[in-house]
Structure formats: C-alpha cells, structure tokens
Amino acid sequence: MGEVSPELTAELLADSNMPRQPAISPDGRWVAYVVAPVSARERQISSVWVVPADASSPPRQLTDGTTWAQAPRWAPDSGTLWFIADGQVHRLRPDGGGAETLTNWRTPISGHLPLAGGLRAAVVAGDEPTAEDERRKAERDDAMVWSEPGPYDRLRLLDLGTGELTVVGGLGDRHVVEVVQRPGSGPLAVISWDRPEDEPGAFTARLHLVDPETGDVADLGPLELDACSPAWWNAGGYWHLAYLAATPPGPVGGAAVFDIGAPGGEHRNLTAGMGACPAELVQVTGGPPLALFADGLDTALHQLDHGTRRFRRVASWAGRADTLTASGQGDVIAACLSTAYQPAEVHAGPLGGPLTRLSDTRPELRGITWGRQERLSYLASDGLRLDGLLIRPPGLDGPFPLITLVHGGPYGRYADEFMGSWWHPGQWLATAGYAVFLPNPRGGAGHGAEFATTVAGAVGTDEWTDIISGIDLLIGEGVADPGRLGIGGWSHGGFMAAWAVGQTGRFKAALMGAGISDWGLQVGVGELGTQEAGLGGSCGWESPGPHRHDQLSPISYAAKIRTPVLILHGQQDTNVPVGQAMYFHRALDRFGVEHELVIYPREGHSIDERSHQIDLLRRTRAWFGRWLADPASKQ
Image (cartoon, one colour):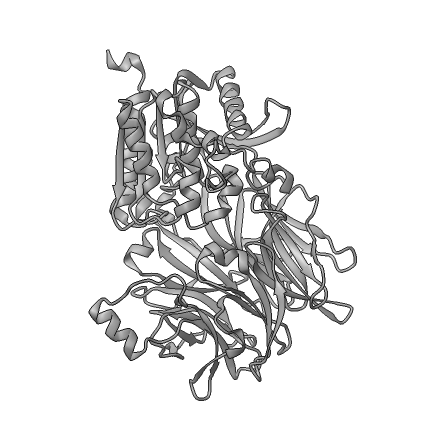
C-alpha cells in the first residue's frame, strides 16, 4: 500500500514556522534570517539563523529561540552580525561564539544600523523613563494629552568604545522612522515624522542628513506621503537619494520611486508610466538601487539605470518575492520566495541568475495533497484586462461550491503564491471541497499606478463588477455551482464581502473579517484617518450631507441584506476598530439577518494567538459548510 497523504489541520497551519527578514552580508558570503512561528507575536519568541549564500553547508541556529530576536544587520566589514533581542542590541560572529550585548537602555530599541569604520552604530529608541514617569506609571496618573509630546523614537549614536548612547539633538521632537548610511563613511539619511501616529505622521515625513561624527543635522525638506526605504546612489560623482512613497496626488494610487538629485530639488518620479508597481527599494553600495516590482501574478527585480533614470528588469520570478537584500556590490541577492505549492523560504544567488533555496522551515507540509492552483486572465465588463487565481478541490469534479476571497488593501494583490495560512486560507478551503476564486480587481498592486488609482472615491463600484465578472466566467465554464456561492475576506476584503451582500442576493454565505462597514466612521477612528477619505470619497465633516462615503458604505445597504454573515474581528484592532463590526452586527440584528459576531480578545488587525487562529480556521470552514452544502446531501 502507498503512503497516506498527511491531513491538513488547523493546528498544522497555526504551528508552522516562517522565515523572515533575510539579510545578506556585504561581502555576499552569508545570509542571516529570522525563524518565527506563525503565532510568534503571542509567544514573543523567534530565532536568528545563518547560512552560506552558496548553500555550501546547512543553516545554523545562532540564538536559542527563547527570546524575541529580530532585525539582523551586518557590520559593513561583514565580520559581525547584529540583531535586537529583548529590546537590546546584540552582536556575534557568524562562525560561532556567544552574543555580546551592546546596549542596556531602559526603553526597547526599535532600530539599529552598524556604521562604517566600526566605531559607532545608529540606534533608534524612545527616551528612558524619568523618575516622574515611573511615579505616574505606578499611580496610574497616565492621562494621554494629545497636544503634548508623545513617546517619540529618537536617533541616537552608540559609541562602541564606551557604550554611551547620545541623542542627535538637531532633529528636535521628530519621530525617527528610518536611517540609512551613505556608502563610504558618509552621512546618514533619516526619515522622520512630526508625531509617532500614522495619522498625521505619514503626512508629515521629512528628510534629514546627519553627520555621524559631529551629530550635525541638515533638513532637506518634506517627502511625499508614506515615504520609506531611503537609498543612496551615485551618478557621475554626485550622490542622489531615492525613496518609496505614494504616487501623487495620493493618497490612493499605489507606490512610486522618487529621486532627489540635489538638496531642495525636484522629487522626480522614476516609475511614472510603468505597468508594474514598486514594492521594495534596496540600496546597493557599489551601484544604483535595486527594486522589487509587483508584476501581475509574479514579481520582477529591476535595477535603476544611471543614464536613463529608469528601472530596467534584470530578473523575474513566478509568484511572490519579498524582503529583498543585496550584497555591497549588488552581485549577490537574497529574498523570500513563494510559489503555488511552496511556502515562502529564503533563496539566494547571483543578480539576474537562478536563486537557490537556503531555508526549510515547513517540512511538515510536504506530502499534503493540495488543491490545483490555476492562473486566470479575463476581461472586466468595460474591457479592462484582469487576473486572478482559481484553486480547485483535489480529486473532485465540478461544478463546485465557490468561495470568492477578496484581498486586502485595496492596494494589495494575490500573487501566484502558496495559499495556506489563516490570512490566505485558499488551500484550507480547497482541501475541504470548495473551489476558491482569488480575484485581483482594479485598485490593487501589480498593474501600475493608473490601475490602482481607479478606486479613489469609488470603492465597491468598478472593483465589485470586476469580481462579479470573474465569478460569472467560472459559472459559465462549469467550475462554479451558481446556487452555492460564498464570499469573504479580511480588511478591505472584509469590506468587499459586506458590500457584496448589500448589492446582491446571489451569495449564500459571507465572511467579513476586520472589515469596514462605514467609511465616515473609519475616517474618524482608524489609524489612517483622512487617508481613508481618499477611498470613501468624503470625511463627513464637510457638510450635513449627503456624503459620498455614505453611498460607498455597506451599512447604508443593510436593509437589503438577506445573506448569512460571519463577522470576525480583533478586539484591540486600531487599524479598523472593532466598532465597525459592532455597527454592522447591530444593523443585521435590526433587520433579522442570520449572522454571528466573533470578537477575539487582545487581537489587533492581525490575529496572532494560536488558539484564535485555530478557532478562526475551523469556524470559517464550518460557516461555509453550513450554508454551501450540497442540498442533496441534506436529504
């Protein structure tokens, strides 16, 4: 008899490990990375590993996995590996030996960067508590006054000889977000916000130059919305700075790469007109920066061309690639890659050449019979070319009950990657007998800025008909049973599920995960505040109305809903606060709609605790099983 295929269980998915944060050494010899369980944030444990970039020997675990170890960074000479554990900076040699603790700061350190020369490091951390802070904490005298300075993360310089941390005073009360050093012992490029909160912090980003020797600061002015990932590059002996940010006028429209050719000069969009979307930007010491681009269902690697100031493709990979890292000369790279049946693992290799898998964090998933994942290409009702994925149940013939899962964002996407997690449960549902449709409607990444911008002030309109066009295609091809349709999603996907059941009675069941029911409420209480008005079309404070966001809010159509809805939400979600779920629940209750409201204590926008992930996976299957079962099976 042949071997029996392992059963896919909720526990198996919740207990899996994942590789994160790969970092290649400047000399290209080593790749460090973090291994953490899916529920790592609950348990606060992870470990740092290292492996030769050429895969000449197996990976080695450098930390014992009993602490929260994160953010591996290499010294510029590749001699030591630095990381943060238990809120402090440590370093060790990749070839063995114990870790040396470099800081003893009484506030957790959020960022670090070893600097050229080996004498200093840049450290990002909040202020240590004063005696008055300790008194107030002990007595719970902790009123939060919004106009007073918050818990800013400040840039500090660590003297490796004395262990002293000195704040860079020239940045004032600015919250430091990112730091990168110009190659060759140069100045630090620093991005800061005027407040630590996303709203209004992301709107107030500025760029500074800091001399690591003197601490002197030069302010280079404001950056575009959501600025991140600064990267130095040299053209003809003159240093430029590039960075990622939202495409103007924003806030809706996806990401672009900008270049500053001179202090106070124009911020030139280097990716204007491209049909793919930049997702990551990486500095290369010996050349122009590299960038990962979301490119339809796949991922492309580009490098900036000195002469044309445009990005040119140097490699592409099926599925998803992320967390790109490059050697000093840019000739060796590493990233996490995932394909349809392969979970994300660390890969490395020459620039433009084949990449070799270095890590193996989920061997327990080998041998499982997965649903067949297929690429889809189809036309929207207005002729726009769209893509997506279909996962068919293993070993069965259609037509199938079809569950449509909408991605988050809306500036997200489905790549042709492994769909086996609580947040991407395509295979979890397919192995239970459902066909799963994963559409990429307009508004998402992967097809350029214009494609992404089309949902500005129009969420739930054309993107909704894009989804319906895909469902109708699958019905017409005999894949989907039109009498057994379900829809669900998380975050923006949760919004789309709530929107769908207010527009049509075609769906027999829906799942609204951490979704928005009212865009005006989201502007008032969500983390991104007025950025959300770019999607909903108004804020609510303009006038008595009627408002555009009311037309685009699922709550406005609650009286029409007849579809049973499962509402799932984290109690401490600050991105989409739990009030959105409560509002929708009360409306459904008022109109007698069958539904369940499940709130997970201690959880934010992501569901991190193991028991909650298991409950979520089981509850999702049970909910769709209750409403999409074959009528013949009930007789």
